[in-house]
Length: 305
Image (cartoon, rainbow, N blue to C red):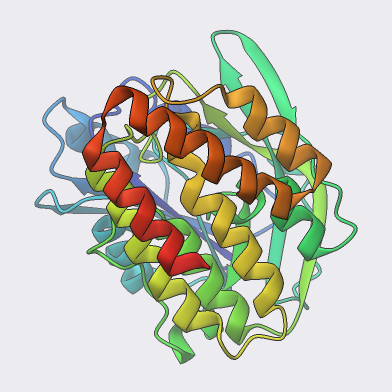
């Protein structure tokens, strides 16, 4: 039996409108031996039945049906079924573009690709500098946030039992990536936007900001800091965590103008950014009397400083 090069793990939850296009885009990758693992996470819109139809069409599609447990649970289920040298993740309403051009040398532990966003009919490429990991961490949060623009060597995932934290419903991607990076020795940046993130879909990564989301991020920051304590890039990662954990507060339309976030991150002036968050956030919280957000933010500051 031929060795599988890449396992594509796709959590499927109520994305019947998109799942067939998603799988079709993946099978344009003809250079490598691939498998698609569709994990139906208790869909109620017919997505599960569509997965069964897709399994009949493609020889290397594996379908798993399970009770709804969330995206982390679905991805972990997929990892258990995977047999490829590399593992990657695709949300069921997203798709891959120009994947037939992809080239892996298979000598790196991690491959990081560019991404595109799709809103309506308009595509926009997310550019990374790829000069250093530290620079991309600070300037391009999605560089580390997502598992969908990365190919992970499965041997490392299995050796160190790296899995998604099923207690986290925000920042679970970042925790997985950080855990993998600590145990990996090599990576390659490929500035080609193979992954297309559908902004108007039902993606597993679409999350609404709430107080619970904020506190969940704080909890994730604690866990990630513990993971990274032995890392040589600990200081860079910690600075990134400050931005990542504060991100939902800044992007919430009721609290803040997102242009300041973009401006500060683009300049790379992280410490100024932190000071401005303190001053402006506390002022806004006082004005709107959002005690729940204020408490969460004060806790965030105590954790990350």
